[in-house]
Amino acid sequence: MENYLAVDSRRVTKHFGEGETRIEALRGVDFEARFGELSFLVGPSGCGKTTLISVIAGLLERTGGELGILGRPMDELKGTDRVLFRRKNVGFLFQQYNLLPALTAAENVAVPLLAAGQEWKQAVPKAKELLDRLGLGHRMGALPKELSGGQQQRVALARALVHEPRLVVCDEPTAALDSANGEAVMELLAKSAVHPDRAVIVVTHDTRVFHFADSIAHMDDGRIRDVTRPNGAAHAPVHTQEVAV
Image (cartoon, rainbow, N blue to C red; front, side, top):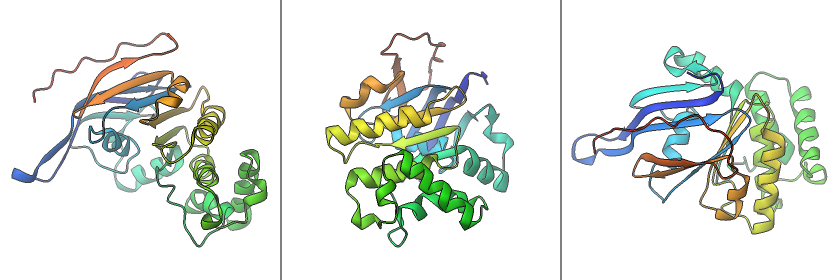
């Protein structure tokens, strides 16, 4: 596993069901995400993008292949160790926000810290500080239903970043937002999440935000078809895929 790679996926497969109902969601995926970069994953609906990032984030188990996250082969981590690794190192930004309706904005952001064992009196002030930096200092006591879509997405972004994960994975972060709010969320991601020891993966259909990408992996039918680098940055070769249909 190369040390400049935050994610190193080799021939990863994932299927659902068995027999006649079996669906091949990932068909031998080679995918890389580098530290200090925004890596986009694009392609038509149903091509496997969400499945791939769910495997990367540890929300789904892969069926086969090799997967390294932050320099650690995932096969080395089992059970509780894998859960703790994900909780410490991975932040996930969901398309539908997934905010808890009974909690305030600050309390929602504090959830990952509380899950990691921090006390309330430490976690909530840290959450409030981050919300303030993201321009929501005046809304930190509001419930999700009292927030606009753009504000909810910024709360969700703060929740994904509050525990300072080294890998941030985002599923369609601008899908429900207008152009201005989508641009603002991507600017916040670029500013808050991209550091030399951190990486961000974004699944998106939103061509309006492609200019933020350092690399764009084009996915189709459970495979990465090609990778482009819009800004012309140097890139390590992508592993060729030789997988039978």
